[in-house]
Length: 322
Image (tube, rainbow, N blue to C red; front, top):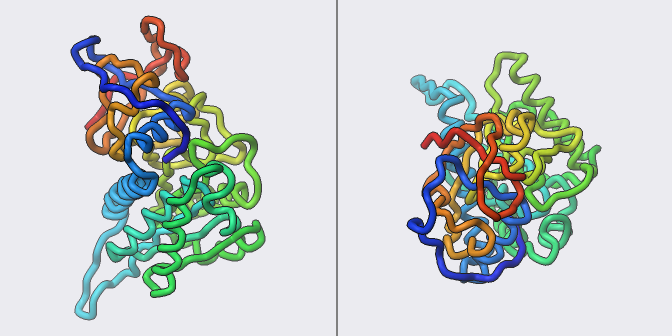
């Protein structure tokens, strides 16, 4: 989820414009405006974060089911339960990861969470500047859960501490990248840069050993720009990505961004259509009502009339697989 501001207005009418055959695309700034407008309409930051984390949890559970096989013997399971590692930054993207970690642990999964950064920055710095109370709240809840031994929780504010955790993280079946979201800008700083290298190394080594290991990115792989598709160096190589509310323009614009994202899903998080007024054109293209996989084709020209937004006149295509 993101943070920003916009003014509410009435919902667009689907009958005013012909329906598109390709999804409407938005950039990071537009998503921030929509997110904040939804909050001004009464949807709390906590509710948005909870919905985003629930969507991550749903896709994580499906992926775990695909990757693992339950083998039972006379004394019980013959294999160790798969390990889910959730790497979280101190901003709202990390807050989504806190929620997913809590929900996955509650469902009985073996979960290890690493806060990549300083806990004192949760809710006050980076992408969460000026906002972040929901991330701080979910961090407090996660600490309480960890104290009951329902999951493992570590704080790694330096690259050295993060690398000491590598033996604990290496057996991961599922790695969730909740390091940086749509509000992040500029080159990667430590310890996030080391965390990105670590994610990629664990994924590569697991596959070389013939063991399944999937990377699930929250909103965007760290750090692919949602608006233009540019990316940091290093950058997370994800196998699937779940973004929220609408598909993002950067992945339509940039072939490499699409490759870094892997399978690309859009999840609704309860944002009302009224929150899009003045931000998304009222052309009858509705956000998905359930988690939906978007299939990208090469960028194609868009023949819009007079509405300029990130995406540069480029649409995704040919359509959506539901």
